[in-house]
Image (tube, rainbow, N blue to C red; front, side, top):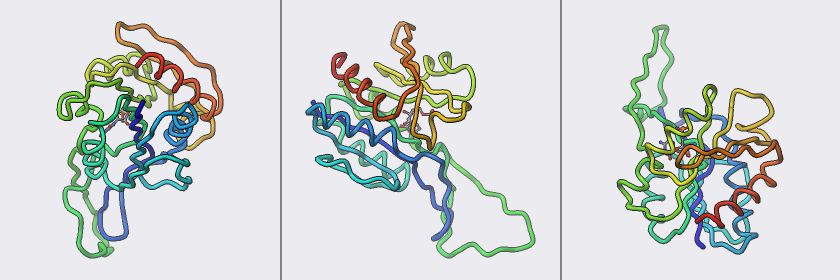
Length: 210
Ligand code: C5P
């Protein structure tokens, strides 16, 4: 099968040297790419800026902004059987990017932000993707309830929920502990483990369900 995987953060520029971003390391998405390749699948990895080597055999497409990720996914998703959206996409970007470095003044600076493209939410409705669709839900409260809502709204086959308020798992760490949320409301909790081991388990689950 051909897997499309999004990974890492996006960067939304304020001026030539500054941007809005987040703490995503890309490790979960890259571990998924490695696990899919090891299981014999083809992988297109659409990635924001991360400090990780390209998994051998992956077709990595590098992007910086949410808009660039949207365009890269739009161009690649048609040929894929499975799409896993693991990237931490910025929800908002500055309305304007200054051409020159913003100067400091004594006054307050108010940033005006606008919503970015909802890439996962576009998979079915805009890109017409008919394969197996997987999202991640990073939540700090009412984990399963929020994840189930996202699963339904975005037309996913699987939503992988993790509690990012807990230390040692999720963002910028080596381990993760997730709950699989499926259409119809059923859930399955996977124990805390390394992102590499979890990725192997997730790829096996997804490949058998897809
Ligand atoms: O940020 P949030 O928890 O809502 O993300 C849920 C899912 O949607 C994740 O799989 C993420 O990769 C995806 N997403 C996206 N485009 C966005 C925001 C989130 O594809 N603009």
